[in-house]
Image (tube, rainbow, N blue to C red):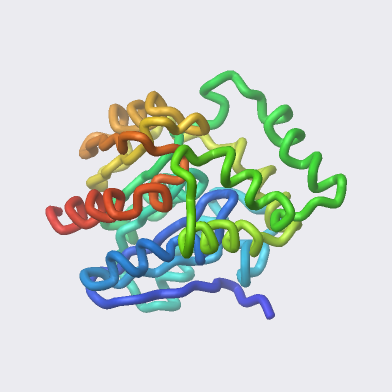
Length: 255
């Protein structure tokens, strides 16, 4: 049975919320919950409409940010660090702008300051991803194909099972809502209002959100730095978990 917000957590210490991408859910963060829970309270949610979390209608970045604050309230957390991948990184930026007092630091992985930087229109992007759903395909049906297309490192073993399984947990209605929401993302002209210390991480071979996108985020947010993971594609937390975790732990421990 769905609940307003579903999450998993591990460890103790400063709270860190992990925000998954459009093709993920809470179980995709297994390498981070295992690798960072000795130092941090690691919390991974199912965003609204995903996994076991109720869908918000309409699904907007503002509504997602408000629901994230609802999770913090539920967990009695005043301020948390946010680690967001792709769509989750966009959500993290919106949360930092809308609720700056509830956010400590940001780690933004393989994400973008605005939709359409490569010239893609919202209509084209959404239609291409809705078409398989309109044919009756589910996220579970497409999971392995999509994951293999956006990674440069072949995922194997437990991590592959977690990432593919996380994609398969996405309900069709929630996926459709995200495909309508994501193209509305644009914080490029507001990046300088994000005062939180920020680390931007991107895979060298990420073709979904190339290095230039991460560079523009790092250029725009005043207290930020950029780290590039060699040989890695769009899913850097899963493709290079040890290196990714090290960059996260170093940054969060230093500030």
